[in-house]
Amino acid sequence: MTDKHQGGPAADDLTLGGRLGYGVADFGISLSFSLLPGLFLLYYFTDVFLIPSAAAGLILFCAKIVDAFVSPAVGHLSDHTSTRWGRKRPYLIIGVVPAALSMVLLYASPAIADVEWRIVYAMTSFTFFCVFMTMLSVPYTALTADLSSDSHERSVLSAYRMFFSIAGMLVGAAATMPLVTAFGGDQVLGFRAVGLLYAPVMALTVIATFLSVRERTDRPVKDADGGTLARDLRAVFANRPFIILTLGVMMHQVALNTMSAVVVYFLKYNLGAEKLIPAVFVVLMSSSALSIPFYLRLSRRRGKKFAFNLGMGITAALSLPIFFFAETSPALTIALFALVGFGLGTAYLSPWAMVPDTVEYAQWKTGRRREGMLYGFFFFSFKLSVAVPGLIVGTVLSLTGYTPAGPQGPEALFGIKALLTIIPAVFIIAGMVLIARFPITDEFHRRMVREIRERT
Image 1 (cartoon, helix red, strand yellow):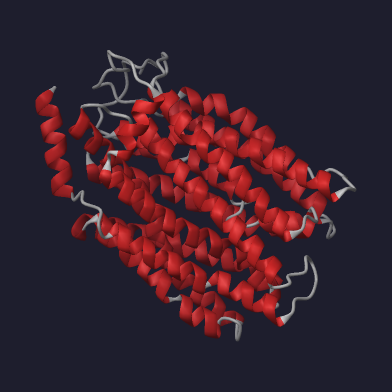
Image 2 (cartoon, one colour):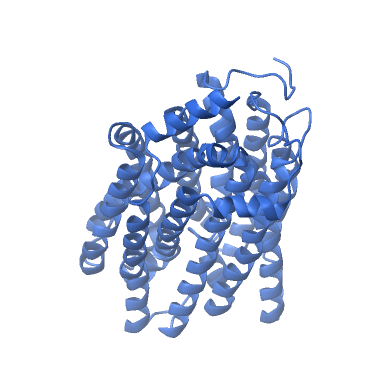
């Protein structure tokens, strides 16, 4: 097989090796992101790097806002790139080395006495990490639409990618705190070592994917009349199914990122069981991974949006028992988080299985295929959904009197519990209402693909 844009496997004839090769990069990417706001970054900022919680939340918000605007630009650029390796694959190599280096710097914990300069360092290093990760992750995820035009095959591809993604999160969740504490209780050295370990793992998995996949060849590399960022943005906003999906997923991600950002705080302060942090994350991620085949079968039988809303509905419903009972027993807490993980499996699979269908919708409506731009804007919404929870969590912790690395009063404990349950449930319900309006069914997608092929 030649490494040319004009070669490669048939678009809808993906081998097991091709699926595994595509998915493996998400192991390293998710391993890296397991340290970020979803799990440990906010804790690292407040309790290790000793940044005030409100400032830490503002850092997450500002860096992700910058990153959010980079995503559509990277998607647009990848849509108009032409190399012998394709349009999307080169960005895996372009982004991976600076992303790995910036991750090392993010967790380097330099000895800066002045808190204002610690804030500047954290803001700068986190922003650079986010931007460089975007340079590789937007084109990487956009490859889903280029590896197959079959809607269910894309769901299978997304399932493989999400399996590796959850595996990466699982390893990060289970190994991070034990690795941190392995340095004689010095968490500064511990997080520094974790950054040095995870960065090369991420780089190697991304390079493995670059070497394993090829892009589709049944369409031109670029439009004959070129393209502008403004025109591509107009096409994004004219894509009604994409906008509905993006807004719905954004609501869900705000909820999930808010929940995940305070799990460490809840276990440490509300439950008084800091040693359970790795076990809870292992249970949560394992349950999510095991549920993916269920949601994959359900999406084929009942539709993707039904599977999506069922899982998220389970997650929202569990907020009440967690609010009232999770503090009473570590065993009950683990059991409830296992059920939450089962519901969350759909959040890992369904969005990435649904967004490629909106690529064909755009092509069907306008004659232009802009998967890079759509995925870039989809990432834009994901970045905002990380920025907003960081601000929410930091603000609520500050308002309720949270004391970094110290004992917490009743108001702070209530704020942590509300951030884990009540506030996310509101966002999940809003997201479910939006996803219920997503108009692309499997039958509709097959008709679009058929009509697109008839035109060419």
